[in-house]
Amino acid sequence: CGVSGMAMSGMLAVLLTALLLGQAAATANLDRYHIDKNEVAVVGVSAGGYMAVQYHVAFSSLVKGSGIIAAGPYYCAQDNVELALTTCMTTPSLISVSELVTITRNTANTGFIDDPSNLSGDKVYLFSGTKDTVVDQGVVKKLQDYYSNFDADIVTKFDIAAEHSHVTANYGNACDNLGSPYINNCNYDSSKDILSHIYGDLASSVEMVSANLLEFDQTEFIKDFTPGEVSLAESGYVYVPTACQQGAECKLLMAFHGCNMQASKIGTVYVEHAGYNEWAEANNIVVLYPQAQTNVLNPQGCFDW
Image 1: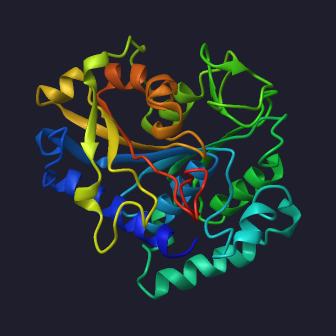
Image 2: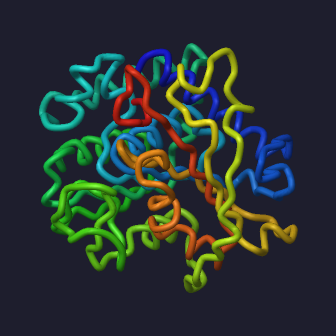
């Protein structure tokens, strides 16, 4: 919500466009990679999940699907911090999906966001743990209702006893733990199910190649603001599978971390252990990990919603 949210989205839109058009020139030499513009998706957890929803809806002509963990509908907060921290997290009964759908359509009519008819048939995966005490499961069910209004192809997973976290098959805290780095081992590979729903049948995962995890310069894509003003770090991360570095046409996944999951807080734990890289290496998916940072208005380093 607010100026920083629009600036974040604008920066990320510029970055995505540059990647698709082969115009990016960053630390990781992103312009070298051959990205299939029809195979772009977004994923995220918590605030990052909200950001992924915002991005999917706003730029629906560029994005084919989303994987959302513990987040709610587009424009839920309506530029109001109190709504963001109450209605959009703990009180789903106050979320009016019909109102948000109307706002979406009206905003699209102004040309500010893409036509939401693009969402029809898009692959959407939604996860919420039964023990999540931060974002009520009902909030994610409101997101399901929201996407249903646009005829998205939705898969849900609401039956795992997980706390508020990115859920993995073999890494992180106990499944019912709430705490840093907000990655929990629930013996469930959410990354696999997200990617298989969005992209179809996958080749079996392989070990990630550490040398394929690179930094890129985010400042190149920030216009009219300093990184601190829009709460974005100077550097982000990108995982580039070996085949993609060798010229293969590749898919693109943008993965947004949650609050207190940025690199300045937990290092590369999320970008290395979310589980996406192993599937990406085997299936020619470039994974982009934008990074937020803290500022006075964003003390937890959240992506804006």
